[in-house]
Length: 312
Image (spheres, rainbow, N blue to C red):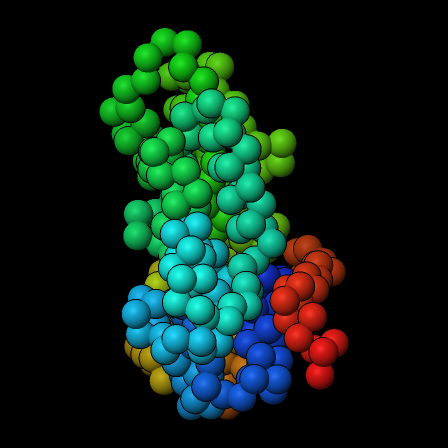
């Protein structure tokens, strides 16, 4: 059996920054820190920080007055920031800069009088935060069929944005339908789907045809991990999204000669290696790392955390 180990895989720069941000916050402020939603969408990461004493909350009413609150990598709406100020919370913003870019585009287009169409998944933390920047001016769509149901008057100024973790292929289908229906629609100067999402999807697209099955390390609520699983399935490969080695079913490997292993942008490398080690030990698998793209992106810690570090 051969394991094709996709590269790039796993943590992106935004996830690395958010996790380092929380680690440094614990060192500086102690473990009694609250995080608005999951720091990243990964069960392993959230459980690790929970064991250290970090509390993940879905509402600011759960956070005591004056406590430290960290915003997750997915971003938040202005309404949440306002509520945090009213409650006297001390905040650190770990929003991924690429998500912040989408927020700023939403603000700019809205201020210039555009109606915005956001391509994304309803209920996702990132989508909720982005829509909160201009709630009266943003309409959410997910499929080309959603685009067909849009009703805008002729000549209305329109622009579209996208969630950063979408399938490139699916997003392009929606964009093509938007441009077909609304030829004058504006778009951001640079696409919103992030480099890490694009690179991991490209790696699966290139390598999955060489494998019998595909294992994607990541949590079920991770949008970018789900997209990797879907791409492999669209290529006709049995694909499984798992949090770790405990979820592996040995029946998957009947008559299997090659496995592609990758990981979503919020999945730690430790869980990847545990799965690789398990398959090597169980089947004597040979590991072949395959690099499709090089990544050298780094995001510095947020300003408020750097200021706190300098003051101590």
